[in-house]
Length: 207
Image (cartoon, rainbow, N blue to C red):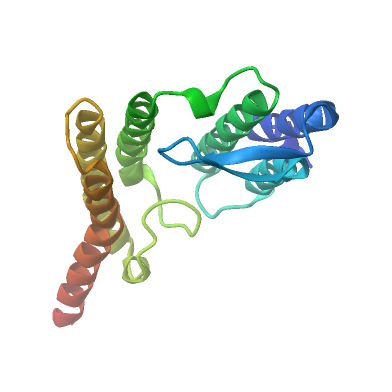
């Protein structure tokens, strides 16, 4: 239980205590997801316990990376969960009205946050040693330490550039924002894996 005493573990416990304290003040059904027309999908108020459960899993999960890097990743993931939990709780309690929020403003915030996260984690990717917890986990990248390192370095550049594109997209009048975001996400997912596969084939040809 030492992991629950880490910052990630403490935040997970805080999320659980927050839900226990507020759950009976919530309506039976709460909004959990909104589209661009302000229409929300709903769920039982008890679904808010999904967030601390996921946070607890991340806090207790043992990765194969260094303890320091794994703890930072766990904390970052739990902070994202905490942000989602806080938004749903505040909306359910009437502290904010997400349905009345201007869609363009909300889109701008999402793009800036997503872009910022890609830049942040893109800068961290080259620092990860070979592990099964964080980093671009292309199957062939595990063949050698050199393949892993080169894959993470290339992926880091792709992530940073993609993050910059998303942040610029937040301020540009692009009519098909969703299409551009989809292309960026596909590049983030598949470009590093294609690069890793190419390196792996070169590695095999030298044998």
